[in-house]
Structure formats: structure tokens, C-alpha cells
Image 1 (cartoon, helix red, strand yellow):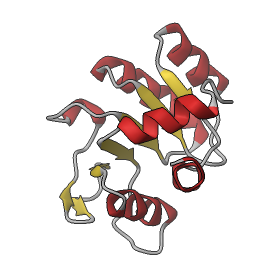
Image 2 (cartoon, one colour; image 1 turned 60 degrees about the vertical axis):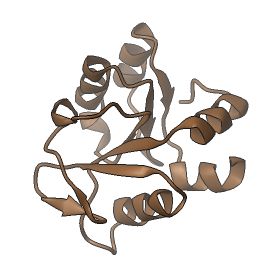
Image 3 (cartoon, helix red, strand yellow; image 1 turned 180 degrees about the vertical axis):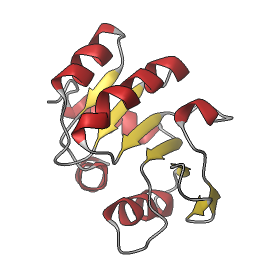
Image 4 (cartoon, one colour; image 1 turned 180 degrees about the horizontal axis):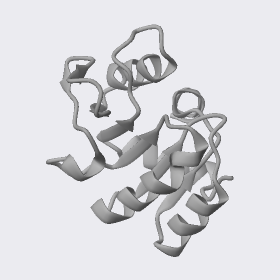
Length: 135
């Protein structure tokens, strides 16, 4: 599921400055950590969103998107597919413009909900891979 053209994805990645990473682990061997580290190394401010950690990559973690103190440009999601709708509801509640579910993660319910609320959506794509390819 992908609601954005490659050009739209490229522009969004170029313009974004802050990315909330839902499900970011503080363990360096985890995919979420490696992807977030890559994004951070490429100039993005990363905000870990995970109630089970206090920080990751030198950044203070928040328990949920509703606890963010600053607006974000992208919400990158590392949660199992059955949790995507709940995250989508939080994305709409905070007014984030782009919802990005990582490779292997899809939910038609979440996709439809985001479309109803005019939130740009990418599912089942790795943001690290797409960034390296498009930007």
C-alpha cells in the first residue's frame, strides 16, 4: 500500500526535518535502531516513541505520540500490523502529515483511516532504503 508517488516521497524526505520513530528500540542490533541511526546520520532529528525505554540514539524517548512536545514531519512506525490503526489514530490526533509503516507492515484499516483524514501514507516500505534510493 502506497498512497504517494516516488516524486512525492522524494520531496517529503527532502523537506522533513523531524521524524518520530514509533517502536524505536535502544538495542543497536534491532532494525528500528539501525534505520533511525541512518536517518539521524543523514540530518534528521529523531524522536524515539516507546514507553519501555528512556532514550535511544542520545534522544529522550516519549511514551506515545500524544506526548510529543514538538511537531513532527514524519511518523515512522515499527509496530506489528495489528497496532497500525492505533498509531494512525494518534497520527491524526497530533496532525502529523506523513505516516510511514516499515517494510512488512500493512493494514487496510489504518490505510483507509489515514486516507479519510488526508494523511499521506506509505506502508510496507523501508524509509532507509527509500531515502538512499530517492534522496
